[in-house]
Length: 188
Image (cartoon, rainbow, N blue to C red; front, side, top):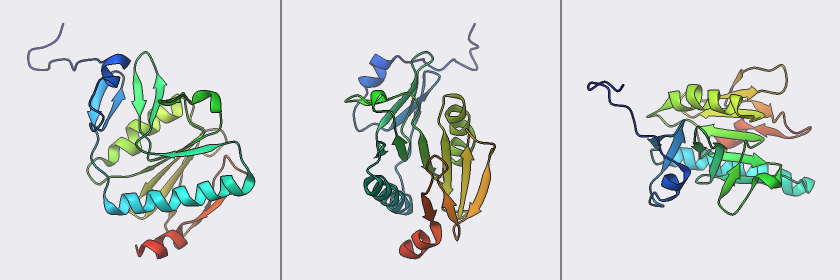
């Protein structure tokens, strides 16, 4: 029984989610809608640099994986409904992709922390990504100038690096991202 002081949030369905206005930026965790803030300039700049490095690697290797950047939906679960929009994701199983979204966990996700809701990336999304099958999850924090690498397949749980580091993408044998180059390009 719902308390008068603490009304229960409305649980939405996939159909209700799909009926939301296209310009409305939201994610859904356990059927509950959460608004997303618009990304900052530094957020977008980091996203562009990382996407370029990863996409160039995939193209050079003639890899089977595809890279996507937000806004692009990932449906992690139907019941309860969980839909996220990672900043950057790599999907290697083409069967997970349809015209609308990725259905199931991407192989690799990068989230760039927004100042207004860091706990979203460090706590909530870490929990969901780990428990719904994401292989590797990076949290890039421009304010702290850190990258937290969570590799769920290996024995690496969580390792933190600074922006002057070169970091291996664990799902690949030979992809390394030099954050000092990115920081230099962006002057951060």
